[in-house]
Image (cartoon, rainbow, N blue to C red; front, side, top):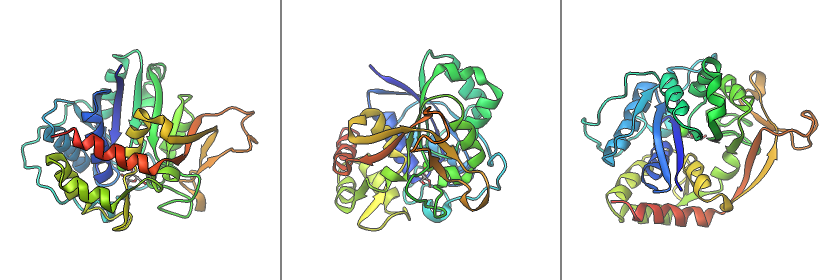
Length: 302
Ligand code: BDR
Ligand code: CA
């Protein structure tokens, strides 16, 4: 059985790797890709999503989304992902165009066409928040949201905030209060499952896909030469191999102002929400399994 998913993304090097896995794994049916401003501006994230899809010769629609967060001023992460968002590999100029509909309209149409679909956001959640505000009827068609973002153990933007949530905390709060079950794939696991130096070297000698990923990853300014976090890829790994994760259900609140802006706070003592939970939070991961799976997946590609 295949899992129908929609990815909302901001490629971004680790987003590109997550798209690579989702496009190619036979048990995932990627229906639509929507782009959001995040790692770089939305014109670039849209073009980058198209480049990856074109690289694999697939015909998956891409829609351009929000140019900026709901309230907070936009700040990119080009210092991590380069000015283009996907440096180091020449994808050429012939990679097609986004569809004419906006991300919110495309998300609405694609979700309503399915009985059940899984949303996989790997950028800030601006498009998702706009979708839920404009078309709340989509919620009953979404089985769950498997989202990269957040942290229970310290941030990568501030001492408490992770980039995707920090970029648009107001959108994150809307998503976490949507009533849809959320799997939070945050820094608690993505910083443990580093792609090792050995894995990265092997990728470069594997095949055309491995060469492409190797080129991008060696231009990626996150982690160190000993290991690089492939944050967004962990969402796809979770969908395919949840047994590799240790999770805990809890209520997650999002801070939207002050020095803790962008923090995800887990109500681990069930002090504020009458024992109700809105998220299953990934707390631990089998990092060796992640590296092995990553190489196995790419070895099956061209
Ligand atoms: C997240 O921030 C972005 O830079 C990455 O693509 C990932 O989605 C990690 O904090
Ligand atoms: Ca991302």
